[in-house]
Length: 539
Image 1 (tube, rainbow, N blue to C red):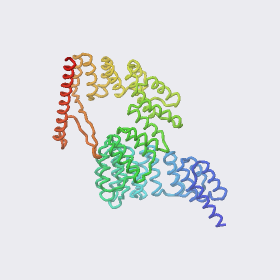
Image 2: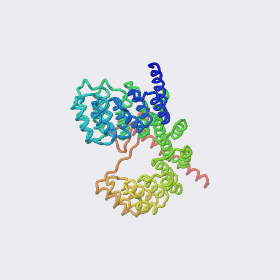
Image 3: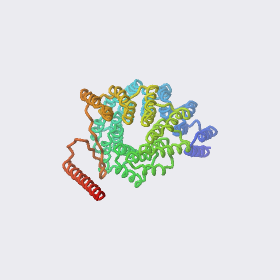
Image 4: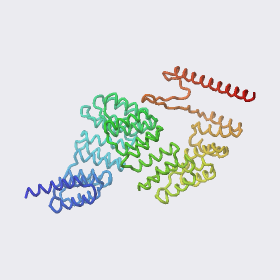
């Protein structure tokens, strides 16, 4: 009899390990019931885990509710299962643990804290924190990490509570996971100064997660140079990056247009056979697109076996960025043929593609189809794309009409698009109306004033042009100097107009002076050649 039960258990474990859909789960559950294994809590725990991993938390909960004598391990598994999909049920189940005659343990609390984060229920989170202290688990590392992650999720308003929990832990009991959670907490709210200080204090116990948390933080805060600097330090200290590190570094490369470093990362991924996940390939496409190499972006795209809606959206946006509007539209058609449903961001990329090549009718058509065919309500970004599209094409009345009738309050980007359209088509009065709104929304943006001043100047309205410049001076608006990034030998250098602090400033100026002299000499020689040809022709 024992041998039969043991064989049935092994069969069930094998069945559960091969489950890949709901039908498989039902068959495995039926096998358990028919052989009397549905009273074994350890096996039920495995079944709940499989249900959760495949996204069938509701079925897992129905199984749990039929268990006559669940133990604390089953409670923990179920709380974990529900924490993402049914956070309120997860908290309810946690509160029922004591009624069932058990005490929450060091696994119960981290799982329920994830449900707290999901619901943004800070009061419940604080009650749970007090409970951990009352029962003597306030210094458990797993629970403290859960508390730090919970408090950090409430942004800057609660980061001090997270730090207090961290500081209350004795130094010798702080493991690398605890340090990482606090660094990630600061990075999540954009406090990179404290994240960096804490990271530097870690000294000998950094791991790849520590480095990745900091790189991701800089990248998410639009500080790509900081992200790349940390990535380089990581290389110097011989810490091997993983797929998530590369994802964050590629994001920074895309923002800076650092093509050489992006290519180095791509080669590293291939050389060390890192798992080319869909997000990682998406990041490569984005990096190549934004760094000017759309051909390589397309190569990465075509080599992918599996593509998400983000993949298609990224390549469409890349083609649009390179002015390849018709190719972007063809890519969208391929996306439809592949039966991938576009989202709102896909349509932003699609409408931008239409705008880049002036496909007004096609843009109008897709703007209406996004609601009718796909049920996607246009957001302010979609209206912005349409205003830019019709404005560039000279349909200025239509652009103004769109602004008046859209169900959103126009923002600076909307009025900026109208001002740019007015500049292209020399419509001074329209430009003045747009600027009145922009002065309220962006009082310190010098570019808006400069555009309107240039419109007036191009029409010989010098008095009005001077008035705009005077208005700019009276309001104390400073002209933002132009800047550019240059990548050389895998290092990105920023240059700003008028800056004299670069260590090679004198050498750069000497070279520019020499180039300028060569250009003047070339132009002088060209004029002499033209003059000689005219004399010879005249002769």
